[in-house]
Length: 181
Image (cartoon, one colour):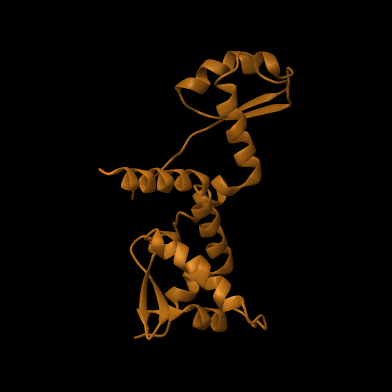
């Protein structure tokens, strides 16, 4: 591999690290805006909508830049394979694909939206950061309650957590539970 190609790959990897939180935040915005629902309700026979068509269906919007801003969101999602995109006559058209359908409720009402909402929640993120930070320190800050993810590293901290909270404090242990039907 030549030096220029290595440099491009290194830069690309660095940018992935810098922008790593961008996709989940964009996904959260798309869900809150109702983009997936709008695409799923497209007229029969119309499998793709442009950003301007989506704006027309979603909002009573007077902002002339709305379609351009929405297109930026849609391009990012399409570039990560979250939805499909094709260009017809110089205009991009978007549609749901097998990945994006996981962000729409299935016949049992399940989707990955609730998990995405959790990991994008500011309190959850702050707690997660503290949990990761606590792995590298021997003492635990005092508090009324300690929220931490359950794994083998965190279990070692439970004893320190017990000493860090008052007698009526609580240690909250969270674990993922998936039920298959």
